[in-house]
Length: 385
Image (cartoon, rainbow, N blue to C red):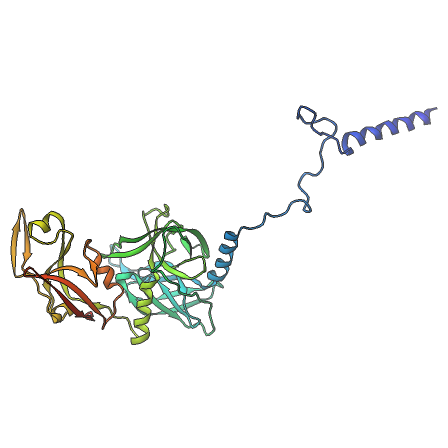
């Protein structure tokens, strides 16, 4: 009898365990949607791998991944050392850092001029595989914040293809790669936010016709590539708006500017800028009307410099002063109304035209001289060094 009682107790206990813990309906929700109380767990604690599948990557994600995998090995970290004096007149090193990218398998690298030290000495490049090389500065174009340097790696290096920046559209996708805050190989994406921006560079110059983008650019990104959706370089990341870091407004120098520098270097073995050699004042609106000049705008030539291209071509500077209110305006010189067919309606037209010129090129001015319109062709000479 006792044995039968024990068997019955074991059978009932087993049934309880089955329905409470093993049965598929344990803790199933009731009709009201509340959890049931038939067991502790319902199925697995996680979704099995035969059910959970990674969502298929979108075409845009695949494009980002492909460009990053191709471009990152060709993006480099650049450090430079400049020696300065501190308050106690002690010589101390000051290190700068930025990015750059390879444009040829033999070690040619494009970057920003401001990434390098003033004298270009002690520039070091670190590749993605963490190998380091001393770099040689081949050419610099401070007015466009560009520089060309080279490393001797003794092997073929990955490099990027240069694209076209003259036909960019606001809204098109761009990708930026660099080493922000020394965090190498960082990719950010965005769009072209605006074109033709003017950017004070902080070095008594203004960078003209630059690309604005919302692709995050932070300290250390300077000199890195801005890429289109084909993975071609269309700009060189140059600056951000604000001092604290990215706020969604970054700027890149169009790659067309770098191509001019590269072409000149390839032809001459050095980079030299063309030089017009004159000073002028932009005049428009009410002041132009008072001076009886076209109100749309123009450059009133103040002075031509000896040995300059403008003086050689016969451009005439001021020969007197005119009092306009509280201002004395240099007067009597030529008034430039158009440059290579572009109307001078803003003060930056001349810089935009000259940015794509080389020594030996010509530039055509439409001028007013003595109330008469005429054209003046100027052959560009080399800037003094």
